[in-house]
Length: 453
Image (cartoon, rainbow, N blue to C red; front, side, top):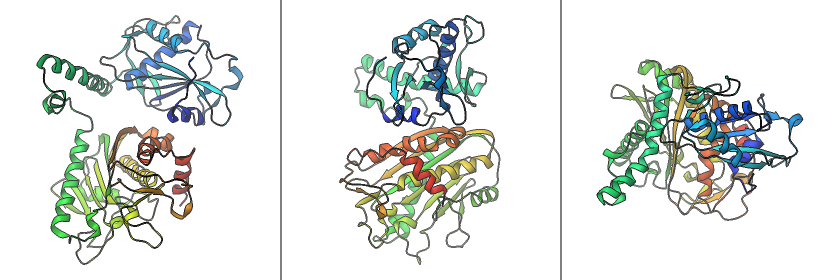
């Protein structure tokens, strides 16, 4: 097996092993056993059809997961990329290429195989052979990941729809290249032709977010003086979510009650429902609840406390807020010049947790969250730690003005691995600041601190 520097995501898998929709843990196994080969093939096919993921060997599937120390082999050379690709060739149609890495635990130094199953298949992958025992994997069966989590045959129309949608999106680039060659047209022009773009699962949330931001900007122009801090001229962040599942039919009053009952984790929670008339939410149209804390011209608000948010009865949510660093406070940097190192993780964490609790009340059965996080007005800002709680020794400066990430996460994953989700959404933002890398356990520690308040 190739030994090379692995990225932070792979190392995190062995530091904090867990099962998730895109992560499967297995004990040490004998790859020469044909039934073992079939079991591993099922896991890799399921992960591939689900959109990609990781197969981690050497851990017991317990809560929490612990190393399988009794069965550790002396030599890990059998767990090579070639070995796993040979298994895939034997059982998968069409075949796909995976990569096997030896990942060293950052604390114990023990090494574990992590097999990366890619996503991006243009067609669903089926099993083309039965297992030797006739049970582990079956001919002409399509496997995916299901809540549990587990790898099992596709069972519902929704699962097939999700798989086919992923395949269609993967074909987009291939289609664009073919049109480019046939028509001799400019590739960028073709890429911008909306008629050729397959629908994205995030289109509904993007449209809701864009409408919310446009509405806020219109009100800011009409209602606020030019020098108002509530115009968020130094920048802002926009957090959006869509609750995807079997939603209950609720009235606006019922939705307002659900929002009012959400747990709070900080002193300035997102989507907070105020009862004072000047701050209370109001209806827009038939199905949108809106709140803008800066709408009262008699009240002067700084950037950090001029929230605007919208919630639709069908589970779309957008929050727009100015940077807390831009609210003048004694001992703080000047507005527009800095970003506090821990704030993005806190803001995203509380937003996700509150929306997750809203989903519990708003849905029948399992659901997932689509998330879009945006930071604007970053260029020229420097990282700092308020009160020196985090060590920031060098000067980390952002050159890029904006940051955006999209993700869809299951409730099970939020409950089991919120620090990992925070890392996926926040670390690329921090890297905008002169390649800054958060220290080990950064997100676990910050989340623990927030929840202990």
